[in-house]
Length: 486
Image 1: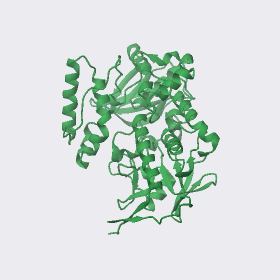
Image 2: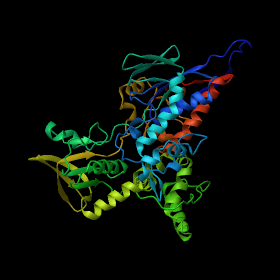
Image 3: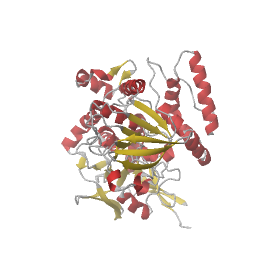
Image 4: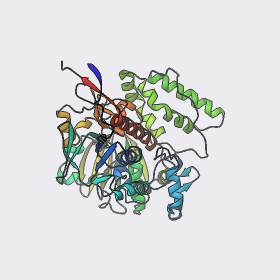
C-alpha cells in the first residue's frame, strides 16, 4: 500500500472553498447527535446535512421510540452524558421541562431513572431548531440503494428521494434480534404465537392472565416484564436464559468510579479478570460497592479492548462477555423491584437452558427446554423473543448494506460484532483499506472500539468523528491511498 500526500490547488483569496455535503443513514441517537454536532461545529465546512430515517422523529430510534411510559433507562440521568460539552444537559432538561413533576417515580435512592421515551423527547428538542431552520434535512424514508457517482455517494430512498454526498455515515444501529433456530422451523399457526418484543403491538394479543415464556434474560426481557406489568398482566411468566445470568442492580449512594485500569499491561482476558477481581476486593475494604469498579472499568474499556490481540478478544467474547454484560448493563431500580416481587410471589420463574422445540397442544404451546439436568417442558400461551440483536453478518442485514458489501465498500468483522472499521470509524473495504469518505458510527463500530453501546461512549465517538470530518473538509492537503489487489 502506498500513501501520497499532495497539496490541494491553492485557491485565489476571493474564491470560496467548496463545502462538503454529508448524508447520514439512520436517525436514532447516533445519527442525530452526529448531525447536531456537524451543524454546530462545522457551519463553514459543511454545506448540507441529510438524515435518512423512516421514523417521524430524529433522535429516538428503536431504543427510545417506545410509547409505553413504564419502560425506563437503565442508567441514571446524571450519567447520561448525551451532549458533548454539556454533560448535565439531559438532567437539566428533566428538571426544567416539568418531566419529573409528571413522573415522580423516576426519582429513586439510586438516582433519577427516567422513562425511555422522555430521552427521545429530549433528543427531539435538541434537533428541533436545526430541523426548523433547514440546516438538517430529515428524509423520512428507508434507504433502498447506495452507490458511487462521480466520486460522490448517491443515496436513494424508498420514496424515490436521491441525495448526493461527499461523506456518508452509516449510523444504522442494532440489527434484528437473534432467533433460536427452532423458531424458524415452526408452522405458521404456531409461529403466530411467537413475537419479537420490539415488534409493533407485540403484546396486543396477550390476555391478562395468559402464561408467557420470555426467551432471554437481559435488559430487553426486563423491558418486556415492565410492559406486561403496565398492562395489568397477572399470568405466570417464565424467563429462559442460556447462562442463567440476569442484569445486576445499581448501587445506592453517590459513589465515584473506583480503580485505575490504565497502563497495567492488561493484554489478556485472564489479566483483566484478575485485576477486576482484585480491585473489587480492595473496594470492599473501603466500603465501596463493586458497581464503582465497573464504572471505572467502563471508562477504560475501549483502551483495554484495543490492547487485546484477536485471539484474546475471541477468548473474552467466549468466556467473559456474558459476565461483563450483566455487571456493566445493570437494571433500573423500578425493574429490579418488579422482578424481585414477581420471583417472591412465584409469578415469575427462571429456567436455565436452551429452547429445543415448540409445538401446539390445544390452546397452549409446549416448549421443550434442554437443561443441565435434562429436558423440561414449559406450558404457555405466548412466547416473546427478547434475545438481543444478532450482529453476525451485519453487512447483510439490510439490502443496501449487502449491496455495498458486494461492491467491496464494507465488510462484516470476523468476531460478529458489526462492521470492520478503524478506530476513527472509517469503514474498511473488502481489501482492508480505510475509506476516508465512508464512516461507521455507533454500536456497529464495536469491532474496533469494543465498548460502544452506552450513550456517553457514542457521544464521545460522535464528537471525535465530527471533528475529524471537519478537519478533512478544511485541510489544505489530501492523502491518496493506493492499494493493489493480490
